Image 1 (cartoon, one colour):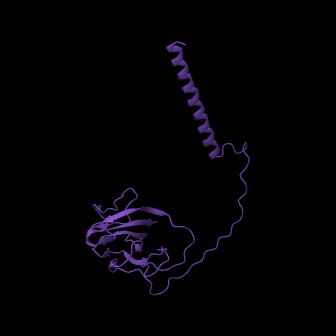
Image 2 (cartoon, rainbow, N blue to C red):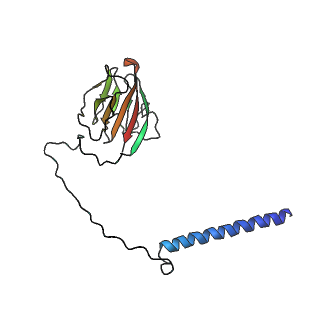
Image 3 (cartoon, rainbow, N blue to C red):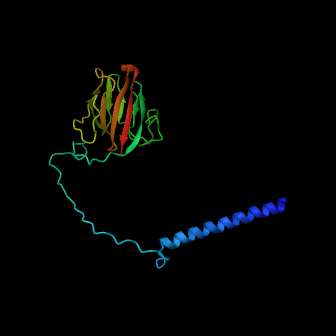
Length: 195
């Protein structure tokens, strides 16, 4: 086969394939617009559904920004960001940082972002509008736990494997597990922030 005839055969194959693709796309569009309704089988009839809405009034005296021990829906929360966090003395972290930021914005906080936690030698200082508590070595469900506060989370006498819950300043729950403790030389955590 000569180069000219080989080139012509390749062009013909591309044109035929392209026309086939265009025909397939046109058929899909026509089907979605209902233009082939007389040809295709009809959609099954929708079944009747009953929807019940329950409205519960807020309890007096509860601040809507304070997390409370509410019943869980039984559905696992969606993970927004997970990874390791290393904090040196006075280092801050934004637990709401995007998954693409493996440093949890420890290096620098972008304009408008604020830190949720800061390492202070013996524990974590909770940032503005964030709350947290030290749980223990049993993994808690931060969404249903109570005891959140804004004071220093003291970790000086806590063993490795201790869990902490943080309710971030952007209204997410973060679960931290202490994996390294070096006092003024820093600490490390496994962190999971949920949507």
